[in-house]
Image 1: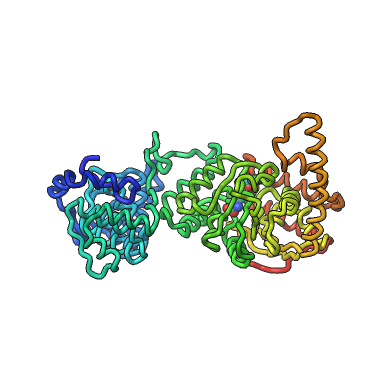
Image 2: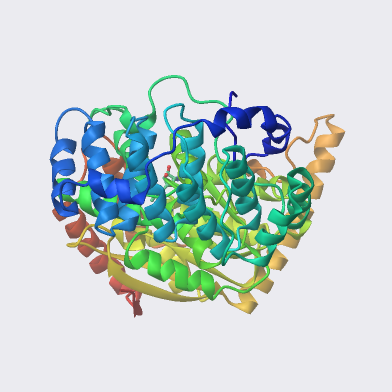
Length: 547
Ligand SMILES: C[S@@+](CC[C@H](N)C(=O)[O-])C[C@H]1O[C@@H](n2cnc3c(N)ncnc32)[C@H](O)[C@@H]1O
């Protein structure tokens, strides 16, 4: 690893042992330019520098490093802290050589913007580059930002790395743990102790770089499969800050509204007023259980839910493996992997296996579920959840897109069977101003829950008989709670014919939207109005509004 020092990695401690030989090289490293020097580089005001960059972005190739570099420096000079930090990150992701000045400006800006993770990651990236040397000032501002946010373990890594570079840290105004660490001087022991107290440092970069060009610079042609989702991921990597899920969700919404919306394309995430409704409901869910989502797509709504109820475990099911990759990448980028598990498969296959996967799981219970899969599945998936007794008493269920393209059979069961307290919440569809959509928010009534228990007892009896018969025939039971068992368990078939027809039409509309020819916004709005008119005779109408 030459004289380079790895900061923030679990392997740091082993590196520290070789540090004394590394120091000689560090002592002679050229002193980098500092804040004052950066000012000299800013020849234009920041709006102009950003306009130049914008213009360059519209060209065929990615903007040249020097334009990006000028923009970083100009934004820093203009106190546009988060802009400067994000642009530096973008340049870093593009593997641009933007020079010491821009890096120093970006790190300084990240620290000023309170983006401590960004400041830390950027120092780490800088450390890996042969052409750059983090200066004392860069370390110092990042150290302050980490200290301010109680990131003692990371601050200790920076302190240790600073020393490897021959910088003497200025500890004035820093908190007691940091100054105590500095006094201790014995880094191995101090870091061991810190790990004990604060847990191991989070690994901040993969062990190996991917072969091939970075995703950010890959050209994605409009007709390519999953072009929309891959572009979305590029946008997130470019615009958001690693480890800051607020910025990740903001970037996704901005992509939906600003990028796709302008081209008449729809991003099917529960953004805008929908996300407000979802977050509010999650905060009102009974405590002590987990959250289930069906339909992860790109990980937007699961990230929103985690931010609404931090510390609650979320399982999100996704049938499309490419969407799984996108969702996992987005969630990982936002630093939420610990809280959100994306599981690949179709709900009808994996709902009965949730207990097997999650834990030690006879006690697995959900406080809330969010249905965002195909509307025509809502009814069956809810029945499966009820029969598997996976919902806590008082658990809330949110279902999206029940008007556009619609989930008429599910609505009928919610509103016409008296088993649920339910609300129909109206809102504008995310990034599609002209169309209304509805979400339902519902809680099962106590009596209905008891009736389900009776049903389940019947089901279990039937299951025991089946198992006995299988054993007699010498057949192995591989999947005790499998889908085939559930299919035997008929759903009520008393749904009015008109709603069954409407459900098929909704499925066709959904298929059309997923297929090659997208559905124009006008057509969506017209369809939503039609669904609204046709469910009204069944007493299904709006009871609440979300902005
Ligand atoms: C509307 S998107 C979900 C959006 C996401 N909840 C959000 O707001 O960020 C629907 C997703 O559900 C997935 N899906 C559809 N039917 C499913 C099923 N039965 N089981 C699991 N995933 C399903 C689709 O592949 C798609 O990615």
